[in-house]
Image (cartoon, rainbow, N blue to C red; front, top):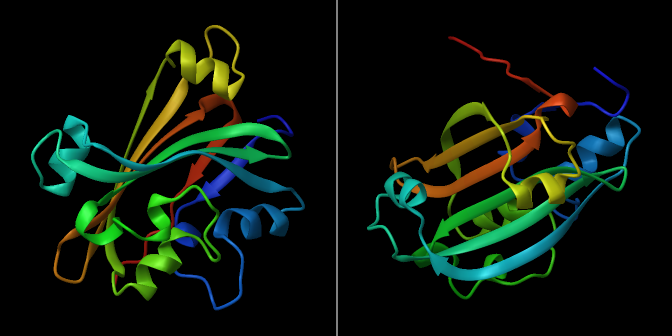
Length: 180
């Protein structure tokens, strides 16, 4: 992998941050001597796409709150992420607004009483569409990784769905699994 590649683990993005801390992305990038930022491209209500509706256990097209972000590593596009929340959880909160959230969305969810305790992730590799290729600044023929993450609370209720698109040639996903 090139010097611009990124090794990513999921755990920092699933754990609420301590009071007064920044978001997990900026902290993880800084720990590796890099600069992690993000641009919020959209935040608000939208109809749930079929895959998201199925994961959130709601009818397709029902309103959900979505935050669409362009994640940057050293000012270079590293990931497109759409995060969806049930309207009952997120409507009228900072999740539905374009301002950055101190400590990140997972921290805000925990403050609202919604803590993720189980997560499932599915990863596939495909070719990007034109908008994804342009946004991620990939060259023709470069594949992307698509990661879909579902977060459930202690009552097995879905509280968040993330759909991420990452340039495959700049990524390595690392999973550590404890069995016990």
